Image 1: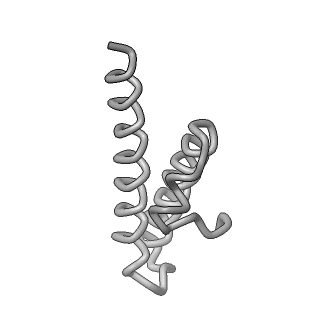
Image 2: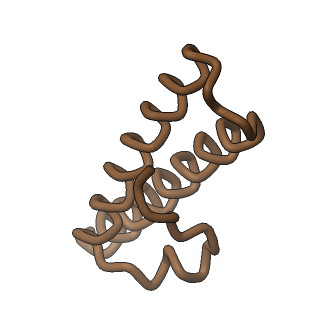
Length: 75
């Protein structure tokens, strides 16, 4: 399993754009591996799956907030 991802919103907001993209990619990889473990009935904690999806949504939301802020500043 990959290393544990950052879950605190405050910690995520402190990341640079490149680090945020890296965390998002890692979260997608972890979700994929958890789905594989679920299908092969090897995943022991089934609550990790929704938590991973929630983390991805949180990362994407913060990335989108930054995009909107940058677009507003450009005008």
